[in-house]
Image (cartoon, rainbow, N blue to C red; front, side, top):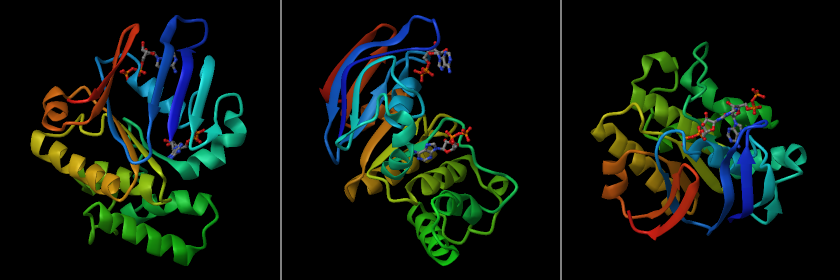
Length: 222
Ligand code: ADP
Ligand code: ADP
């Protein structure tokens, strides 16, 4: 589903953030990207979503090479990869429902289809009944759920989240993780960057560890 072959990434003339990264993620996997702040977790996720190009190496997402052809691959990636960035990028000048409808409108779906799909996505993340609220009226955990709804409304095969529990207490962090689990159970390949050790230890999953200058595939344990 996702393959990195000898991938390097630096920004501008800076040093390599990621150097000679190799790994493969299979369809349906649930993977944590762990490691200290600043080590390159966000960078790795952005490479998979095509939001940053690699400096060198090959990145394959669902049988398509996305390095070098990033611009052309963007519409394809938007359908294939749903991403929730650290800053959720919710829009506070419109309702929760309108936030979730936005990606569908951008893709050219008609209003009726967008509406019913967005409503379904909101129910799936447990926000049924809150469609009309402005995101500002939602709690931190609910805003995170809304960002998840927006990321999955296109039914992406791959779901990526950058520190989705960063600003949440343990209980809400747990609930958010359950939402990701639900999407993973129905086949969505899921990658979550997190440095929340207690959370990672509670869930036995494949973990890729990114430390400054070092990449380790810890395999299937917390
Ligand atoms: P993490 O997600 O593990 O905290 P990041 O991938 O955000 O790590 O950052 C890794 C390193 O890359 C940091 O030193 C950060 O300052 C640098 N970096 C991230 N994005 C950019 C950018 N757009 N331009 C220059 N440097 C960046
Ligand atoms: P900009 O409008 O600044 O050029 P982009 O067009 O790259 O930024 O992305 C616009 C918004 O869409 C961003 O908030 C980004 O998080 C989101 N986005 C980008 N790629 C994806 C994706 N594959 N799935 C879901 N949302 C995405």
